[in-house]
Length: 639
Image 1 (cartoon, rainbow, N blue to C red):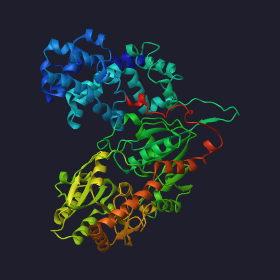
Image 2 (image 1 turned 90 degrees about the vertical axis):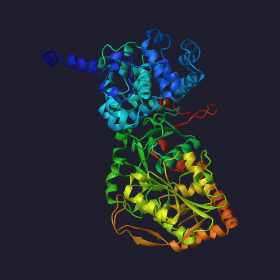
Image 3 (image 1 turned 180 degrees about the horizontal axis):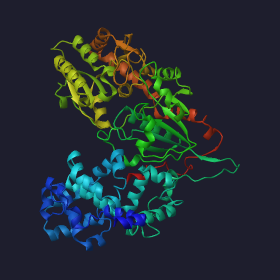
Image 4 (image 1 turned 90 degrees about the horizontal axis):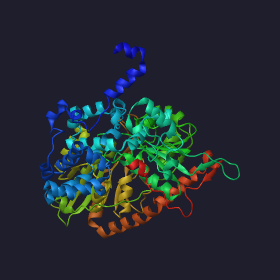
């Protein structure tokens, strides 16, 4: 065999590909030693559906693997979901035949509604490391090694159930064209070789290559195998057409690409989403690409954020370190030539690290969210720097009651919220705790809640925070929340406090003000773009030198040291003058709504984009005709 492979290299490739091919419908395919670590993937019975939703999922997938007749009758049995014909049949005719109880039928419907395979798909989409190791993990013709890894390592490492793995395998088997698209969207080599991919202008060449690469694979046999992958209405967002206006000028689509951490709950994620919405309100189309940050912490779906770099301008909303220089690689996105690139950067000190100057060749200009940040970048970066104040919009609020945290109804609640990955030394929660301790005695009806995300990712700092909170009787919550739930915490409080040493913008402060909460904050850095003595309670500070290095902020730089005594006095003022504090909160809300509206932010962005040569020297194609509805999210990406 080795001699044959040496003489005929293509035979070796075909042999390797067949060896990595996986067929979920073959019983032997699921016989791996890993079955000893959980339920045997080939074993199922009607009784499974009675016990749990996972059991119902095993029943639904097991029946398909056991009956070719069923697979022919329901070719998209799993992928059609709860509204599909297979789920309906299982819940009615099959349920009667199998003698399933009402509870079992509910479990079946719940399984289809939850889409158990989604977690496995998202695990793959979020992890550049897994994609590199198993480049064809979404394609049955090349996923055997990935399946083995899922069963032998991934199941335990990522707490995946047998039902979730099976569901994923069935969905990939039923949706080969869609999985080809997803693979192309995150595979740099495929994008480089086939820039038009499965769109109408490229699918013929792409499909011919797939047939050569995976010879004999039935799913690629038909010339129309990729016809239904990309709806005509979404062609432009994957491969923009070339055209000219009636005057002969090059016609450019009115759109912007955004690269950011869309799947990673953080201030950067929110800034990117706000920028997207502001641009859409200004009548720009937006193609969003998620840049993987920390897959273990990414909790939002990545599939809706796999847009390509199809427009003439790209806004990169990724911190300069550590991922900016490799943002395209981590995003699985081919970097196109001839695109005008803008870094939309926040920074918290009055000087930037000298190493960031090395990023200059990757950019055309910099947008800064505040004057404070803009001044810091202008000192060193040899690029145009423009102040572009972002917009902030409150979304759905999931109510949090004081009683949920064990707080008496009559207590006045102060709140501080931060992410441990943003550096506790800068966010300075210990100062908030100390100011609260000095302001209030043990018997007074005042409570401080400190909400932290990813606290235990920094064990030493978190231990220090826990000790300070315990000593002062402060409620400490360490949990990554949905945005709606996080808003609920802010809405529950009576006053928001931030004694930061430095901020690039101050998103939580802006959100609290938009909810009408009186805000106490250090009178320094980016938050002064929307805070002043007439709409908030600012705390005095001394500008101090950073004494020692920490992972982000180096010794020798400067930031504020807020006055604990003044902060305590401001907290005491709000506690004793609640009507006046509430009125200040109302005034702050009115000003924040005007200054930080997404519509106003969209106008500021439009003003800057009008100066970009790609737009200024071209006929800008309207985002849509006057009678065309606003663009919806890409269905083809969200599937």
